[in-house]
Amino acid sequence: MIIERAQAKLGSSWQGREEKEREALDGLFLASDTIPFLGWLDVVMGNIGKIKRTAKELDFAIGSWVNEHRERRLDKGIEGNQDFIDAMLSIMDENNVPIQEADVTIKANCLTLALGGIDTNESTLSWAISLLLNNRHVLKKAQEELDIHVGKQRQVEESDIANLVYLQAIIKETLRLYPATPVSVAREAMDDCTVAGFHIPAGTQLLLNLWKLHRDPGIWHKPLDFLPERFLSDHANIDVRGQKFELIPFGAGRRICPGITFALHFQHLALARLLHGFEWGTVSDKSVDMSERPGIIVPKATPLEVTLTPKLPSECY
Ligand code: HEM
Image 1: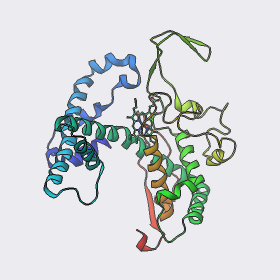
Image 2: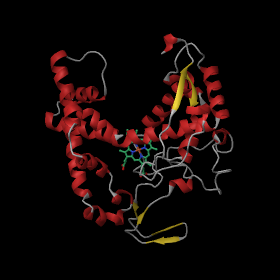
Image 3: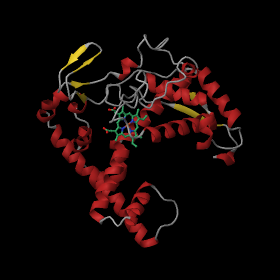
Image 4: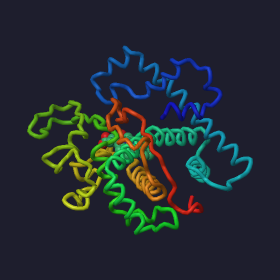
């Protein structure tokens, strides 16, 4: 995804680049990000160099977006639809932040949004759609909930989401079965401590296996089954905001994902619009392949192919 977007942004300047340069973008994630003691491997494999080149590419691409926005505002003033960069530029202007400092802040925030928010959201939504296609009774029930609360004459709006409790349960159940980062970001013990009876000396790095935790049969009844209903009955009090340690797809504690609210808004609204606006199908009516590919953001092994048939009046689209 990141590569495709950078490619789209760089447009013609991308053409003709060497394959190895494109591969540099793959170096965006280091082995040591997930398994810190593999840091030496990143140096040996040249990943550090790749990541520096990647950083330059991204800095160039995002810097050009900021420049385009600034020039447009100088030309035409602030009018029409405002996007994230416009909003950030306005805040910087209002606070008289010097241009260079403003640029660094805006670029850093855009990068955070892009790196933290694109693949995670895309992967979660793909798994949710796949699970629903393989569990048509759940899909049907979600569509019925939408028909009751939204009707068939308009699109779903953000304000509808609070009423769509079954839809919210579907997203929780998807995040339980397919947490976007199945292995958490590492933590380092600052002091000697004891975790689950094990002595952990200060300085030890710990990784949490969210995938296993979310499928623990000691916590979850039928842990491998897709059962959104569990979040409306025996697990109704569990949310995903890092307070209930049985379900922590966004992590927990001080370094918990800062994008939770945005991610949940996006997941709920995107899934609701797709369910409400379209009848879904699979190519050749086959069930969806649920196998996974290795990756930090656990991707599907095969691309998801869905057929969508509009089901609302044409003026709603
Ligand atoms: C379904 C969507 C998402 C999932 C499942 C997810 C999951 C996570 C997880 C598990 C962590 C590590 C937390 C920890 O170590 O305790 C994390 C960190 C982070 N996420 Fe997300 N995330 C999602 C969406 C987003 C979005 C939309 C953004 C940006 C708007 C974002 C930005 C970040 C950032 C910046 C961090 C690093 C925080 C830090 O280390 O202080 N994430 N995310």
